[in-house]
Image (cartoon, rainbow, N blue to C red; front, side):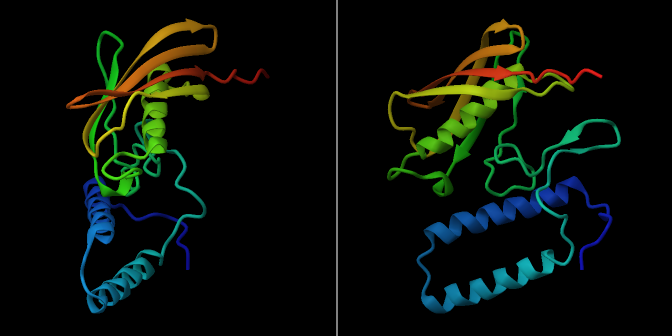
Length: 200
């Protein structure tokens, strides 16, 4: 039965659960255990999923509001605190307008052997470039995103950096890149649009 209200759970506990699921995903990919252990783990995972499923919100998490007015995007595919598929990114805004994030991408993000999937690179760049245009209360949506893969991005630590190139009306033009400790691997240019507010 679905509950109509959510009990108070500390944010740190949600984060801890998500970190544990990320560890499970990584080990699921890399495990070389025998069939008996795999079956035992599968049964435990199913039992845990059944337990969590006792009280679910309908549909997706969405963007929820805190009492203080800030927003929670805990289901977001890039920054979601409760999304074990998200790296997640912690977005930083420097005084000079630079937006950046650092993370470490492991086995769950692999495309070519030992390298980050190109679609994952595009996902992360889309979010960080978009963050240059985002304003409090005025989200920006992606109009176009152009990616140039200079070379493969090795699994491991990466840094995503972006800045605004120019602004034209509701459009923000941003540029950025991904770099590993060995240097830049992917470049991106994007146009991000502030939807016009409806007139009454």
